[in-house]
Amino acid sequence: MNTLTHARHMRRNLTEAERILWGCLRKRSLSEFKFFRQIPIGPYIADFVCREKKLIVEVDGATHGDAHEVAYDTRREAFLKGQGYRVLRVSNHGVYKERDGVLHAIFMALQEWSPSRRPPPPPFGHLRPDEESGWRALVEYRYSNTPSTPPSRRGGGGRPPSPRAMAR
Image (cartoon, rainbow, N blue to C red):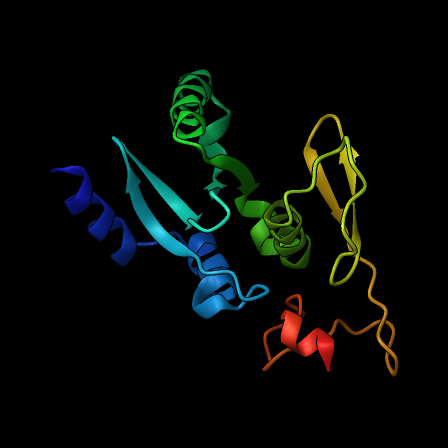
């Protein structure tokens, strides 16, 4: 099976975590950035790609911890970085249990934030570097009427608002 055919097959057969994250990224739902799913880049297929910002978001399951998968992911990431992409890896667990934190991490990556410079103001919450697990999302909601309730956008479950919505 060639890469394009395999990508089409993967688009039709997303994992549950990929399906959940795709629901949050599709149709420019995350701050108006356009994402594509299961896109062939060279011999590899990227889970989610924002071509405008050259960002790839990879959803990793439990198998990405064994030595063989780590070596494969390292080669794959080196190739993708050689093509000018940045790769953000998120876990299935993060998508299931800390979805807002994962979306915030993606938003920060889209803003091209790096630890060496001050981050832009986030749409909500903040991030803290954590040596062992990469970026750990710590979400704090600041909402006028109900501080413990995340802001909602079209029933989207607390996704970051679009720049247009923030301007209102």
